[in-house]
Length: 82
Image: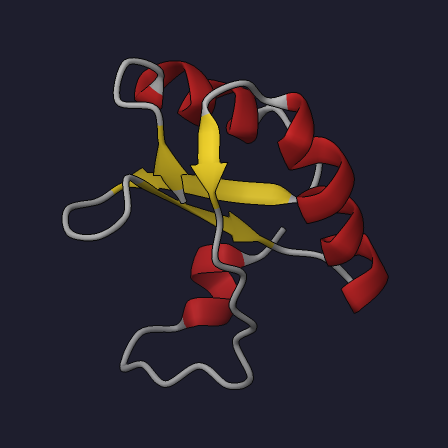
């Protein structure tokens, strides 16, 4: 997500209060924040992006990506179990 630079911390906190958002990271590069959504289906993801995110002042743009498979040497299931 790209965020109004004066609202990054406020937007991050508001995102963490949304059901379905498990983590929010401030990052360097082309984006300001990355929010990890853990939802059961695409409809729930669509609800987050089109209904919940638009209620937060300061979000300028979003890029939504779907993860198909995780590759890691860590036990991701135990690290990210909801």
